[in-house]
Each structure stands twice: as structure tokens, then as C-alpha cells.
Length: 108
Image (cartoon, rainbow, N blue to C red; front, side, top):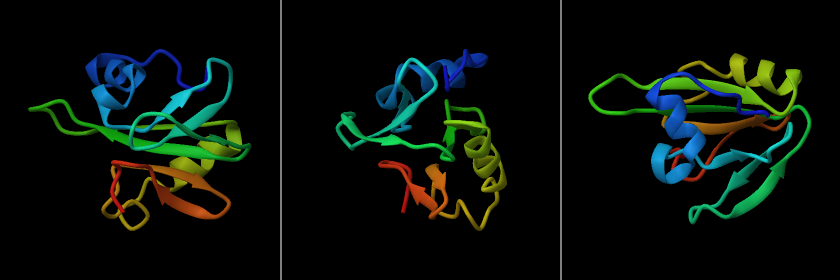
């Protein structure tokens, strides 16, 4: 799965979906990822070379950032985007050849 078992409460929230984590992306059950719209419905399939960077926060702890991707290239792109300028005003984003795009609920 593109979203493997994650340790801790923040990881479990991410796996439960956007209502629990605020992150609008989910695994397809195989090695793919889909982005979700503001209502949690599938908005689009994320293609090869696409990664995701997302933060979850479970009060009172600091945010936990997750990096994943459709494939190794996507994971690398997402990891490289884990910078303050790339993620300014974003808590969740899709990272691909076209750059960094906020996910719904993830900022602007």
C-alpha cells in the first residue's frame, strides 16, 4: 500500500481519512493514491511521479509530517518539497512535475 501502517495516533488518524486527519488523500489499496474533494469523494487519481506531504496535529502535540508517494520518484519529490517556502500556508499538498499544489483543507 502507498500508505503503509503508520505508528502513533497521528498515523492512525491519517489512515482513517480526512474527517480524522484533515488530509484529503487516500490509498487505493494497492500502490496508488487518490486525491479527495472537500466532501471526501474521489477527485482524481495521482499518477506516477506524484508525492504527498501532509501534517496532522492531535492536540496538544506538535504536528507530525508524513511523506509518501505513488512511486519512488513521487516520494523523492515530496521529501524535497518538505521546506518552509514550498509548504508556506499549506498543511497538505500534492507534489508532481508541475510543482506543489495544496490539497483541500490543506491551505492555499
